[in-house]
Amino acid sequence: MESGLMHHVALWLAAFLTLGIFSFLYRDNTWYKVCEAIFVGISAGYWFVAYFWDNLYTKFWVGVWVTPMADRPDDWYVLYVGAALGILMLLRLVPKVGWISRWPLAFIVGATAGLYLVTYFASNVMLQIEDTVRPIFGAENDAPIYEIIGNIVVAVGTFTGLIYFFFSKEHRGAFGRAAKVGIFFLMITFGASFGYTVMSRMSLLIGRMDFLFSDWLKLIK
Amino acid sequence: MLFRVAIAFACLFIIAGVAGQPAGDTALAVQQTIAPVTSLIATNHEYDNGTGIDLIWVPSIDDRLAPSRVTGYEVWRSVVGGSGSRIAELPAGANKFTDEQCSRESTYVYSVVAISVAGNAVSISTAPIQPAREWINLHRLNLLAIAFLVSAAVIYFIQSARSGKKLFVRKIAGLDAVDDAIGRATEMGRPILFIPGIQDMDDVQTIAAITILGRVSRVVADYDTKIKMPVSRSLVMTAARETIKASYMAAGRPDAYNDDMVSYVTDEQFGYVAAVDGIMVREKPATCFYLGAFFAESLILAETGNSVGAIQIAGTAMPAQIPFFVAACDFALIGEELFAASAYLSNEPKQLGSLKGQDVGKAVALVVIVVGTMAATIGSAWDVTFMNQLWSALKVVFQTN
Image (cartoon, rainbow over all chains, first blue to last red; front, top):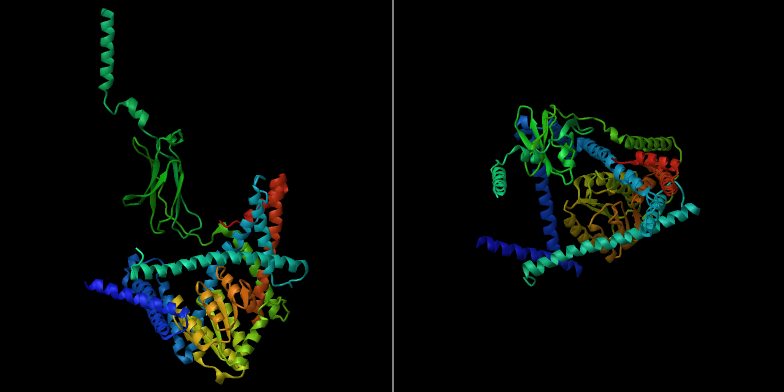
């Protein structure tokens, strides 16, 4: 009975907040401001709690104090490095030594750049080139016309797109014309991507509408 | 007549004798038993963290019949001194498997069981093997070589910039609008809104946004315009405050700086958007900058900014979000233009050198695409040996696995 009551209260509260956020479509109003403040406040609190339990407790506390030594991975002691960096970050709260907080920041930026370099290079450079360089008429010289056109579009599009993003030369003359072709390719791609993404946004809207009309109002069964 | 009766008895005797044979008779068993796999070898999986062992074997000879009498294989693993367990089931015809769930501290023994309807056949076990890890993945030497080439170019150009050499970077459309947009906000007496995306400082787009913020806030400090910067990450708040503070100090107006210029909202994507939308409609900024990594919030922000009549300058390298900024903003920095703008505005040797070094990489890619496509097309269309060899060589250099 109690859970049923709570379910109804939660349902009405969710509907109230959803409609409050939707009311922004008309204009900024008190209802929206209330919903916005609740949303921001709860989400900020939620993330604080999530970070605390996911990182400080689950990773550090459990990893260093709770897990038996025999079950720990070889490199469990690196957790202390993370903790030390976290403490250095908190030194920002002490004005006299606040500059030390730049060190963990530098570590994060540098380490992430290094980690991403390999995957970025492999997927965004090597794989692109590997997929672009192909025989226009097919490996057996028997590709159908639509595949030939596709191969030409891929080769020309990648080539001219790269020229557009070449910053060491002014876009003039033949180079400029190639860059212009490149931007045409980019805009056509953006157009297709725009339509595709709008479709996924519509599904989000449909999801909320489904909640309002099915779960809340029970108009759709 | 007697002869016929004798024949009939003989037939009955034979039939009765065959029917009376046991199920496990030799002739029938020979027909149903399958041969086990042979030459089972376990080797360390190369270039991993010491978690993989490769197995290879010659399939059961009965697997080569048509139709195959083998229905599949089971891979069994046991730790030396421990009990065994089945770790994989493979279809008929399989002749290799990689166990990726190993521990560097353990020694393993493997066997493969050939499965058939009539019965199973267990192979001879492998020799004990312990996985090992390698520090360098030699399969990716090509990646290392190309990374070295680009890195060398970057270092060369950074050193050139530091030694005072003027590095040319073409003008980027949209950057001229930055000063105009800030001037417009000053004239209108309305604030500037700067949104650095929703990613943390470990994202290079956020770093580029903070670099551009340095230039924007310097002009803001000079013009005595108001700037407002709600952020969704605490580290970004820290970095942004330091950047704006440095700009105000460089402009000789440290007293005008206020920590409230940058405020943390929430890490939650749409909670942040709700708050920023609220700020937009209440404070009606004259100019909005959206620079950094954006996701689904890009269009919501840009449409709201548009509705309050703000001049909007956006830039992101998120491919799915660029179309929204192109459609809804006055100026959009597309993809790498964001990083180029950062280098162009900061005029910092490291960023300029990095940009020029990347251009070297792009030049190499352009050449490879042209030469490679020509070689592949001519080689396969007219069977020119040299072209085929060239294409094969390029494939080896640029292969990713």
